[in-house]
Image 1: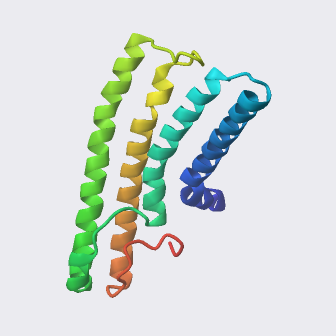
Image 2: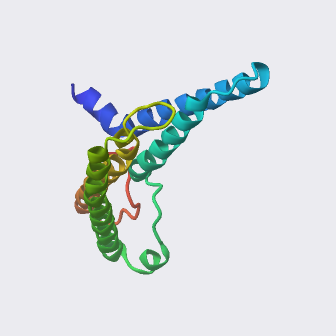
Length: 172
């Protein structure tokens, strides 16, 4: 069970991103085949590919945190010592978590408003709520990941204060 949780922790977003990307690529491929070989356009494939792309973008937020590929400036942190870098890292993690938490909370009301309207997508006839859920899901997962790796950064700082890496995903 512990090994499963470790794999889930490290690869949850990655698995979703790979699956959705494969679906998106296959949809676009079949749309091209249908259009040029069968002279038939699949209206629903473009719509589903678009929603897959949007989900991919918002699932990329927590994935970037897990892989340590999020945007951060190193100019200031290179001029301070290990303790200063640690403080800057904590500020970065807390501000980022607060930002994505705030956006996630605000997006919940947007999704609730869309759900009240009972709108469906034009081609697929699926609830638009499913399409817009990517925003709160991505933001709340991002918030969780920023807090999680902020905690890991604190723990790593206490064991090795000279460790200057932002987050070591593979080592934790």
